[in-house]
Amino acid sequence: MKVLVGVKRVLDPQVKARVKADKSGIDLTNAKMTMNPFCENAVEEALRLRESGAVEEVIALSIGAAKSEETLRNALALGADRAILVLTEDVLEPLALAKVFKAIVEKETPDLVLVGKQAIDDECNQTGQMVSALLGWPQATFASKLEFVDGTAQVTREVDSGIETINVNMPAVISADLRLNEPRYASLPNVMKAKRKPLDKINLSDLGLDTANRLTTLEVVEPPARAAGVIVETVAELVDKLRNEAKVI
Amino acid sequence: MSILIIAEHDNVSLVGATLNTVTAAQQIGGDIDLLIAGNGCGAAAQAAAQIAGVNRVLLADHASLDGQLAENVANLVVSIADNYSHVLSAATTFGKNFMPRAAALLDVSQISEISEVISADTFVRPVYAGNAMATVQSSDRIKLITVRITKFDAAAETGGSAPVEVVDACADSGLSRFIGLSSSKTERVELTSAAIVISGGRGMQNGENFQMLESVADKLGAAVGASRAAVDAGFVPNDYQVGQTGKVIAPDLYIAVGLSGAIQHLAGMKDSKTIVAINKDSEAPIFQVADYGLVADLFEAIPALDKALSD
Image (cartoon, rainbow over all chains, first blue to last red):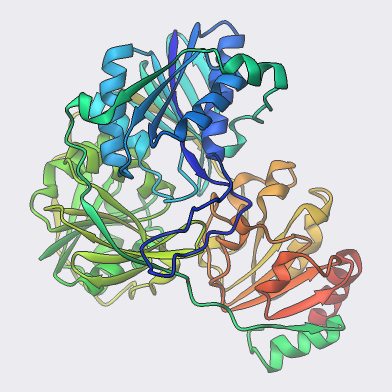
């Protein structure tokens, strides 16, 4: 079995996003960038499937600017066999990303597409669902456990009301939640080795797809700040404030 | 304009988030139809017909909609979406699951988790864990939207009398099967609709200690939540999780106990009206968003709080 796993380069989750003064977006100049945390779970799951013998090849795919190569090298250092970078300076919407995924799936014919459930920057939570729609494959989103049973995938999903289990035909698109696994770290020798692993670059324009954005961002601003609070000294003072000042209990 | 809302329900009753979605639709403006898709969901359709401001309830009651699998729900939505200018659902795990699939099938972009309606084609949505608010304008012929429910009040549950019309469901895609759902059993008010929430973090040390929070919650009529760290550590089930990747809530009172307040947690609760932080580490980031901070050992403060509320 062959797995295609999507990885996205995003602002490090520990770094607070700064809005640009001209309100055009987030200032990423010199900002620490990293692999989207949910993509790390997707990569980890693909690697575990290969280690279990269920999968022979893990291909990492990223769609973005040239610097996304760093994120793909990271995936290769973690253990992906090879990587594909679809180059574009534009920030594509999930619908366009899904069209690129579809084109790559048709070329590489994987049996499974693994992605993170959402990116922590634009927080769309769409790409996996859209990829499966365009391919006509089933989807299993927000996966916290994955098993193969008689040629199908049994997936445990974290939903608002608890834990749901579904069974999907293969090939399928599965989106990873954070509790799917605990991602590994890349060892230094593997980081060195990753530099020599194959990484194909494709220009987005060569794929001949309509990837025009449908949304225009008019402005990006900071949310209103909360007024500063007070430190209370005792539980009694806290209860008094909640009863008589905030009037919430 | 005409708006279709895909209601969330358990066949018998509506999930509260649907009422907030109705309010978002009213702000866009136009006739509002509500789709109830399920298997044996007639009762939910009757409940939906009572909601104030609903024009029609569309009922798709079919075995293929058992478990509301994304493939079958999306195909149904696509089959009727062309009659509408907007299709809305709450940004819950239900809405987030089928809506992008329907959007891709219709070749439109989805607008995720809107927090404000500016006009029929322009919306505000939080990005970067709520640290920025983006205003976006859609050029798509149909706007597929998920709604951040904490940003819209609930519409009145009664007062309407919409007709219920039966629509055809699509055949089962055969791609996926619903096996089961296991919910944590609680008598308590639901996390997303609770007026008061008390949440614990890693500082709780284990699952048994959450009983201290449960006891306080009983006295306040509150729901109990948790940080990702507490869920990852196995103290409580996943449906307790508040944050960027869990539930986004905005109760009147949020009490954060023994949790540091990572960016990802703040994203799920910082719109709460009043925030209380109880943590022994005075440097914990949670104090930056708290209206009332108590620097104390939770193992002394929570029993004392419990006692104070009993008096």
